[in-house]
Amino acid sequence: MTAPKYAVPYVNLPEQTAAIKRELLASVERVLDGGRYILGPEVSEFEREFAAYCGSKLAVSVANGTCALHLVFRALGLGPGDEVITVPNSFIASSSSIALTGAVPVFVDVGEDLNMDPARIEAAITPRTKAILPVHLTGRPAPMTDILEIAKRRNLFVVEDAAQAVGATLDGKRVGGFGRAACFSLHPLKNLHAFGDGGMVTTDDAEFAAQLGRGRNHGLRNRVECEAWSFNCRLDEIQAAMLRVQLPRLDEQTRERRRLAKIYNDRLRDVVGVPDEGPGESCVYQTYVVLADRRDDLQQHLIAGGVEALVHYPLLIPEQPAAESLGCDLGKLPVAVRLVKKILSLPLYPGLAEPQQNRVITLVRSFYGR
Ligand SMILES: Cc1ncc(COP(=O)(O)O)c(C=O)c1O
Image 1 (tube, helix red, strand yellow):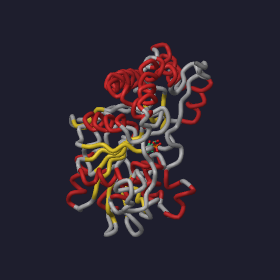
Image 2: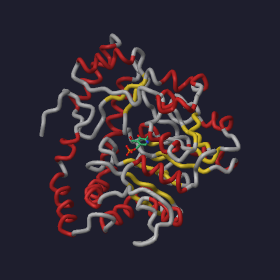
Image 3: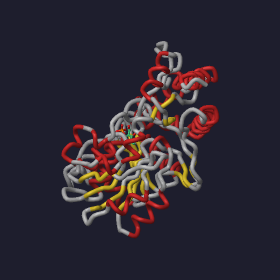
């Protein structure tokens, strides 16, 4: 195991993996010996287990979270002339997955909690709007009650971008079961992760799940017939087997993330904006994001002190060169524009030791002269 570059790295995947390495290797061996490497029993079992975990009827595994979103939008029939309402402060894939169908992402502003502000949705709806894509950013559930109410009244699909939020709950219900479908990423930095790329879609609709199952596999209806052009974006058996080792441990890891977040919240509240949970929310802290004055200087102060702090994400999606043709008016997104200069992700992961967390806290406090 190579020594981390920072006294407090942003994550420490080799250390987290070490505890379950034996079981992971045994699961890989099971696949190697079984001889089924694509769409075999590990994938089917993991899909069943993941759906049960999320409280949804079905889950369809795919190659990554971006494919999950794109396949869902394609399956909903989105194309040129359609619009999807989403947020500007997510990872680019939330919007690229819409744009790649030919539809247009339409950005609405967020609240102080960094999630979609439902009060902004109605004004963004046009006759072309087909769907709403809230993102459960940082692992905090978006305000689904209000979003679902608007979507129902205006006859729009809701797709959850749950890439960062596996296990998060709102009013006791896990994300993944609120809309027509929900999309998860199993990227190595996510709370439940593959050793490489992976993604999942959850849905309660059997025909929709079957459509996604064909969509991830060349559009094949059976071994011979292709019903519509599509991609090859399947989850590998080896990844599914290793994910099955981790899923039963996810809740324990989430409890640890929540414990660490509470310590940060309690000890940093007087110097930076901390992510307190709103009513009914139970967050999973895929990222622990504070709102900091003089953010860039604080980040440098932390790095100089051996703490790897990151910004997720330094550019709003409409500011990306790829989004230029959308001609989005940033003046309509004042909260996102203000908060993007303040967000800073501090190290938070199961295995973060008390002295490491203390070091982060001491450095943040000392930056503000406290
Ligand atoms: C909010 C969000 N949406 C979508 C994605 C895309 O997932 P993936 O990297 O697995 O393609 C990510 C992952 O980084 C994400 O954070």
